Image (tube, rainbow, N blue to C red; front, side, top):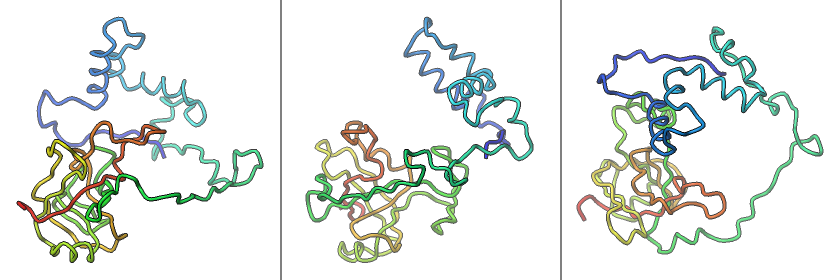
Length: 228
């Protein structure tokens, strides 16, 4: 469902910028005054952004500005939900993943793979609250989720303060300190934590070599008691 939304809270500062204003400002600084896109104009009127979305993605976004005020929003077409498969055969096609080797970045036995995730009270990088009813964490985000056996192997217990460090960072600067460990049933060898709090563990060049996707879902890290 696509629907309009407006902020309900008083801005924390008169200098606080919207996300479109931030992106448009970066684009303006990058491409200069001669840019083909009117970046300030887009930030000043979101209707112009919707016009461009309609022009680029006509399937489902026709008359975007006219339909955005529909009470409850409007539904984008999802062919799969209508059992329409846009494939050569007209049927759903499945491809089996071939596990052809372990992650080469795993390396050493004490290295764990961290996946970053968002909470229930979060939309992309916008955090609306400190509660995550998905995982039973309330009032905070500075936590690390780990399997009970992974904690036991490191002499840790739920509630301990821990440090998380990037496993193969030569500088030694990619370290998060003082997070609280939370015990959860999850795959062995894995950890989970919220983003953007843990984004600093991922370097700019740590990404998939084919797609260019950053490795935020597979970050080699080491977990230790805080201060050690």
